[in-house]
Length: 270
Length: 86
Image 1 (cartoon, rainbow over the protein chains, first blue to last red):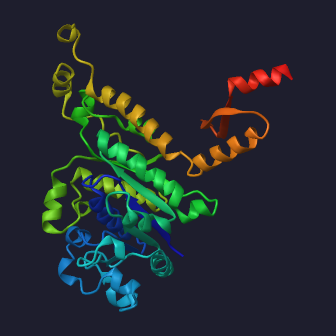
Image 2 (cartoon, rainbow over the protein chains, first blue to last red):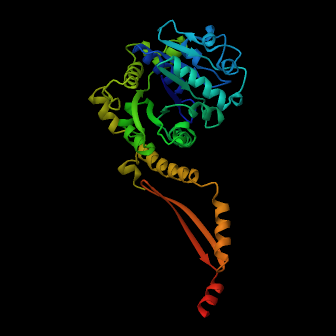
Image 3 (cartoon, one colour):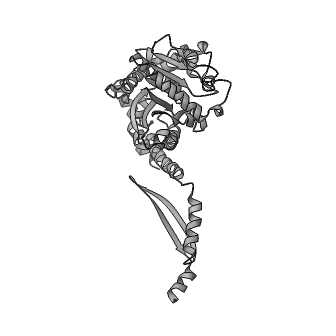
């Protein structure tokens, strides 16, 4: 019996799909079987980030409709044999999802893999609700920026009222990933600190990811940034994946820039 | 006025203040109960059997772990006078 985690954000463009791809691969690198599922029907992107776009034959809507078996639609990664992928449908739109079909699919995935990671569409409409409905936990991705944090709070509110677990009187675990942190901007008081974001959203932190040019370079190539051992963002995703696999990984303080005292001093007077 | 002398307030702390207020009000509006209007109408009907009512106000209050409904029934002043006479 695996664990089902929905990756949500409220606002789009904060790095949700990048987080899904990297955490999925990171979990697979920890010797756990992991499937990442693109729930963003009509706007599929996870296949591109994973470099699997040319291998997609069937999608999750076809599986849910019973047109093909799950095993036929699932793609096994060549980068890591523990990582599997199920693509979103590109031709249909979000409204095709039905609760009962989603529930059946999620149950089947839970039986087959240790970790099931669902990449939710942006927004808080029905596509989002279907993604969170049967999840055990949610990873909330935010940027240190007002609109992202506000939208995340709305998404968390809907998670707390629509999740099947909550309806059964249980708690749905929520973990925050703060993405695109700039130490330099935090030092100069131009960006919200992670402590402030945690205070506002009132959920548990699972990791902080710095702004890193390597992320776009990685998505250009279709090779998740976690594979680049030198990348700061890649290392951050490795630490988060370790935590999700139950390891005690110290929280690294990436909010202090290590670019030297001189730069810090000049930053103070800007 | 003295911004140029003491430096502008850091934008991160402005963001925190604005977010705190915006999110509090977002959460309040999400907490509004769907049956509020119906319940109000029924309360008015019940109280009216005994005394005239001007308005009913229902608020959901949250104090830490405790959630409560506070219901204020404003009576019709003319009716209140009648009660006192009797």
